[in-house]
Length: 448
Image 1 (cartoon, rainbow, N blue to C red):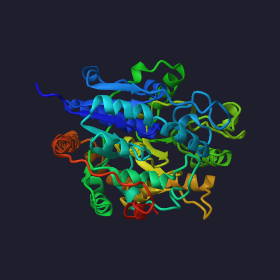
Image 2: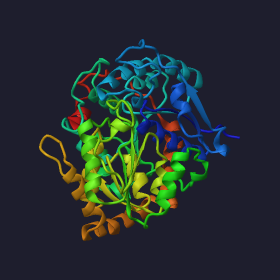
Image 3: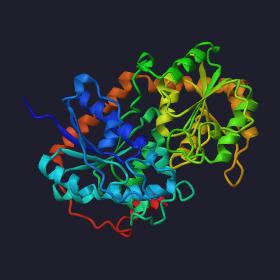
């Protein structure tokens, strides 16, 4: 019996990266590929459990994150971006993360995998892959549109940070050193953007499909009484009438932003369910909301939320969110009307793509990026109770059919597996290239 293909996965320590890498690992395992998923022990514990019939093919490898000492810049026990109170402090996580290259190098030497699949921060994997003659593939959890239109005003990639290498140089080194780019997308959704990306980087760009979440109703497994009450309230609402509001775990909203969103929900006079991550500036849950906030039209849950179960509830009809790629896929899966309010990284370019496709409306903003409660209320009412909103539903129907076409999405995964099998055999290791800004200029020009 032939030995199964062995792929090592190494995602960046952010759950917007860990989860898509996990989903890709499960998808590959379904095709008989053996996966070593490398992260830190705490991050691995916080991941979902793989299907029972695939556990023998997915090996979780937990390397302890090297300690930088517990201080106000590096919270004790922090292993992912969500553990840091401010976006600026994540630079210190990059320092610790880069130190994982030593156990990872030893692991690759011992295992001799057929492929290494890396994220956009693991620039040091280029040299490891070349030293041990293992082909390297970059898996992008972002859209092709993000890579097409990346610019300084969307991402601070041109600033050398505390880790000693700028994020722009990290991305450039990975693109320069990988054999191909796999991307969580498909031609039916981003055809022209995928073609453009392949021309920009001069390497194969392989869509693996949108990795649409399975239709699993895990509501009966939720043990938190608070959520049982919320679902009872949802079940009493009219179909497609409720707006789900969520900005994930990475967006660190300021007090002004939270308060304007709260008052905007109130002004919209629409039923809503808001999953609000407790802000670092709030001493308790009460302080997280404005003192005069009248939320009798909806519900606010502070903390973790079962997002897929919420989005799948028949009462949910729209979503106010940050336009993160993963959240967009989860929301469009159910055909909801989208209102986008982007903040970080790929969110602005995703929001632009969704608006261009007629799948979303954007919250108006001032020149300084600020927005008001009136802007929130206006966008929500346009989406939920106007003719304009009806057009969103028509457009969403087409996107939803693509997302939920299981045969189509699995076909892209099958082609990807074929590429891995074919090119693992034919791969010839190239000579090592210095990771300098000058040598990566042809790649970096697309990220400035």
